[in-house]
Amino acid sequence: MSYSNHHPSQSPSYHAQGPSFSPHYPDGYQNSLPSTPGASPSYKSPPPNHSHSHSQNQLGPVDFKDILRAQLLSSPSSLSSSTSNSGAFSSYGSSYNSQPRPTGQLLSDLHQRILRNKDSLEKIRSLQKQVFILPQKQAIDHLDNHQKTLASDIESDLAGLDHQLHQTIFGPPDLHRAHALLGEFKTQQIQVNLFSQELQQFSSSGGNSNSSRLRGSFALVVVEDPFPLVITKGKPLEDDPVVVQLLSGSISDIQSLGKVRANLVVENQGKSGAQKVLENEVQNMDPLRRVVKWHLKFSNGTRKNAVSLKFSTQIAVTGLNPSAPPTTISLDTPSTLPFVVITNECQWEESEGLLLKKVVFGDRQDVEWAHLANTVQRHFLRATRQDSIRPTRSLSTLDFDYILHKIFGGHPMISQKSFDNFWNWFGKVVQKLRYQRHICGLWQSGLIHGFLTRDQIYQTLIGQPVGTFLIRFSERNPGCFAVAYKVEDVDPKNQIRHYLVRPDDTAGSKKTLPDFLSEQPAFIYLLQVTFNNGQTTFHKFLKDSVLESYYSKKSSLPPSLGYDDNIFFKSSSVE
Image (cartoon, rainbow, N blue to C red; front, side):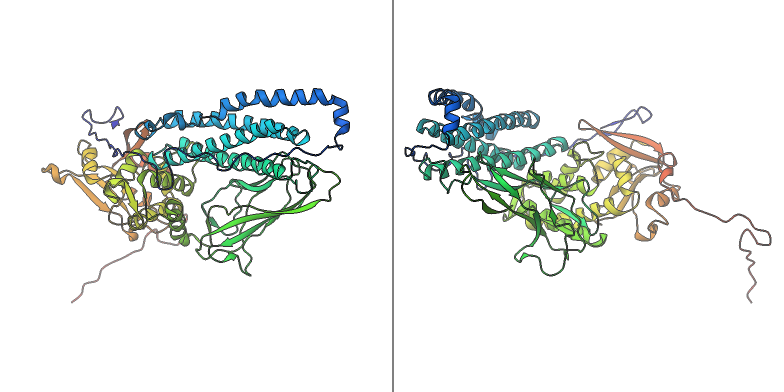
């Protein structure tokens, strides 16, 4: 910790050092992941196919087979270079558990992996189309092996990244990037499964592309999910749309696209009842990009219950056989992450705590501290309306160290009961930051320090002039502010005092926290905190120079003739 140049030369210093935990895979994961189960699809020689004679006459049957064979026999090396045994976590083996890579390097590797996967998927799409036109057993076997390898590697990368998020506390930019990568991997996982289903379907038809059973594979997927989120009734999600996309295998002969409908799902109750909650529940899909984007708006609250959305549509497809009649396929997305619609700000704290607990724990009784910290950081930035990539002031390493040791006793595993105790305190802090006038601005500018132990406060203020003060959140009084300040006293132990700001010290918008501070003669110099690359720096200012812009504007009537400027009072003697 350092001070700006006008501070005393002997500055107190302290640093927080978080506990080091031995990372391990959470329940349900293994150090190595098995390949996608299932044997290669069986192949039967197809009957003569006359429907493609025109194409064969154009290219020549021998030339077409040679071209296709060359592509398929050369593609294993190009596909294998990006799939076989090259998952971002696979090369580490058991050493990954003891020496995880820095998050920046890991995420860069995973991003490159995503790009290679996209290239592999496009090659699979192109080659699979050709295989369906001119089937060959060797080609089918190659495609099947590529798809299984790619599916296995994506599954491994998903599990590895999720594991890392449970073991390492990410900074905001890396945290945002990691969740974006998780979403892309999941979409790619669905895409490769569609190709695999299609290939299996083709094999079961005896390799006959004219079979009425060969309709292609489709999936309706939520590719951008802004939830979990507490939403205020009547306010559309302008900056956080839900994006739904139609994915398909290599056969995508769609004759018509139906409208996409959003359905509200209440936990354990299926679709919602008679009360209309969602206003704009039906949208048209972009026929070229096969994407629909929702700026959701809710007309009623969900009574502090967590709900989710499912999207559904119908499409008409013909498959490879143009003479086959169109078939209507109904598609549904899995449920989105949960959200709550509130009708007033008093419901926010309880609703946000409900969502946070559901997302953090799921069906588990205990979770890793890093997993909780990463999830709390994402919710905190959303609650304080900050950019998730470049926030003005996120929760710092010191903040997390304070929470871990003061609230959770330094335990690496967090129980649901201890989380409830944490939210009873922290939820009121975030409620203040979100809704109370000026508080979020004071926090983001560093004029509210936030979280400090009394020992750290003493070290920070003892070398400062009399009248220096800082603002923090009270440990024992959730949602209340405490002011630590230095007074003159012969005993150094009594020089640092603490004042708890009472509810009657402020009066909403009429008298705010800055107004209260301005009235106190004992508070002269305010310490502002900044964080830069893990270094904490305090800057000392006369309080009016940094708080004046927050003071309430007091209006007064101009002097009027015939009226006293002040109330006249004369005491009378009482006998």
